[in-house]
Image (cartoon, rainbow over all chains, first blue to last red; front, side):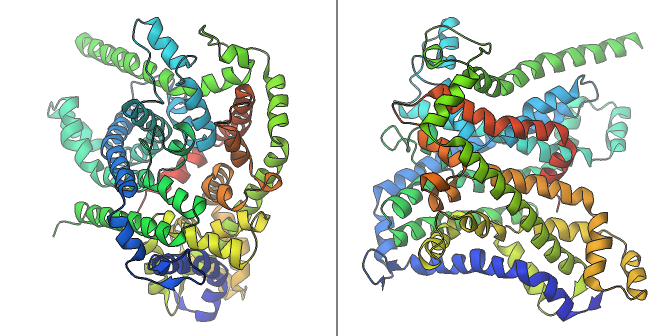
Length: 286
Length: 278
């Protein structure tokens, strides 16, 4: 490789300009905005204005609690499901592999709005196909939208449906990079398939699974469209309000940019913490 | 030997018995999207269980077009996604090329900043981006607002950097000896070699733009400037709205992508899986 400053920057500059203007500067800027009172003209520097409000705001803690609750339940369920999907899709015994792959991977291309609309319709109280099917097998219909627990469950079901296949694709790629002879040796030593899964597959997949978990946590932490569209702006009564929704409400409904930036930086803080945990979990053993 | 092949058969049956219901559950929402899009509203809101398509798609589409100018919104979405994909592939592969094949002052810092900020949530830049584009540049409800800010995405840079750095250096050195200029080497030697990676990247970027919701919702909120997902989103939750129409819109957003997915599955999966590799 040669040392070529001018040539390199000629290739880099167009991208770097956009990157600086629409990514790096906003990262700095939103940090600064979070220390300003933004509903006065001109904005004034008030370091504790937004952060002080944040610490005492029940709406913030409600959104934080909901977001963390979704994280803690939905992400492990989805990642486990994705591992199961990937392992089974990888089985040499599977026939019509293409059909199964299509079934699990198809949600990856479905937009948030389109699938939110379908889920809303499928789960509606009296005419939703899900309640009709529950009824037809003798179960009580569930009021998915007026009670907090089913509403949260619905959000988790929807997100899991949309993203499990995405994670399965990544995990499947990880599986296929495990050399066959590891399993052949284990089979020769009469290690059962189940033990092979727990003692070979899972440990070797750990970095990929941790990566998927981090990606999913950061994605779910910003959850916006599903509670916005499926449970109607975080309903019932704020029961599914997330940090993403609160940020939207504060920033773009109340135009309270300072407070919204403080919420955004809370999310960033959580993301940084989670990334550090990932780095620690997948560190190279010394 | 028979017991072994019997065990295999038993395992295979178990596998299919477990996976088939799961696959059907997974396909169910997509299937119902299609079914709903062909049913009149009084059919969707009737007590019976309907699992097969009807013939009302065109009526539903007309209802949708009455509720919002969906065809116009699709036009905006297509143009924006095509332009965004082209520009983003160009910018990120140029940057990826520079990072993969040259040594230069500040390279370590550029790579560190890209890697160091990649896991920050998008929410962090939302407010300043909005203030900048809407207030400072006065570009709300324009195509530029939809296309340019999302170009910051750095996954493509890392992806193309990886692609170019795997190519043998001799390829390019041979051209250099002949006196071929660097930008020609990039355009006519490196890019053609990277075609599979470019395809994977382009598909992922196109899909991201096509389905993008939050940013277009914020920045292009005027009826004539909305993208298709935003236009469809405004109808969800209204009381006097045709749900069959909404489903027709959902089908129009989804089915083309499903077809692309089936046709280009290999590239799709490569693109998604590559996000994970290193």
